[in-house]
Figure 1 (cartoon, rainbow, N blue to C red):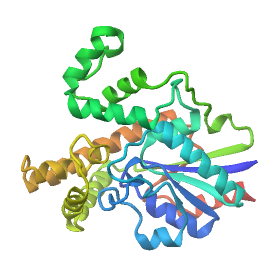
Figure 2 (tube, rainbow, N blue to C red):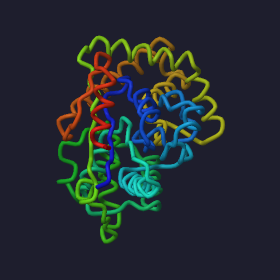
Figure 3 (cartoon, rainbow, N blue to C red):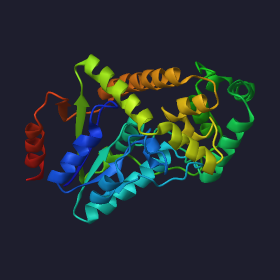
Length: 305
């Protein structure tokens, strides 16, 4: 039986630091589960591991995409599954960690749709979203399939993108990924980091935002814009921190509003991530910062021995 460990929790809960600590104690290799850390050049705003850490410990699915490229959950499941097989074949243990909860959930449970989105499909979807407003797209869809747009928020670009995928993708090109839980030779162990003190989490997020701005987030975004043709509809620029910084550089918001906007958006993300906890079969709950690391180490040792 092959073991796979999943380390998840809300943003600013210490996932990355704990993952590095576990890497120093056990033969893990990390598989990134944060959508925006897959992009090259998005370092500060994604709280990506430092270059020294990436060199010291083996990471997968970090810095694999150019900022102009699109990526989706179907592609992630395919790539992550390949990484898992490579890690297990080298007698190491996969440690999947990151904040994109939906990506982790689909990796575990399989993809719910029966189509595969090709690179050509993604380019067409991106073209449509760049050429037309959300309102125009929804109106066009409602013209031939009104049922698809029920309860769609006109401002929810992500849901609209998923609608376009359903309409455009080749439904004959069905995926065959059933999810890790369906693999009989795998044993999944999910570690969920919780922060019971909500005020502590809020303060951690405030410090995180200030730290990113002090570390040069604005300059990072300027550098990306100077090298690539990016705008607010480019997938990587929808990331928290980058979206708001782009608004600041476009003079839509002030520096003070930039700080508060990133903080609020991150707090809202953390809340959504916590609600995902109910969807997962949690095997070990780690309460940060009160929990004793040794109890977690003992839990992992017992599994591996």
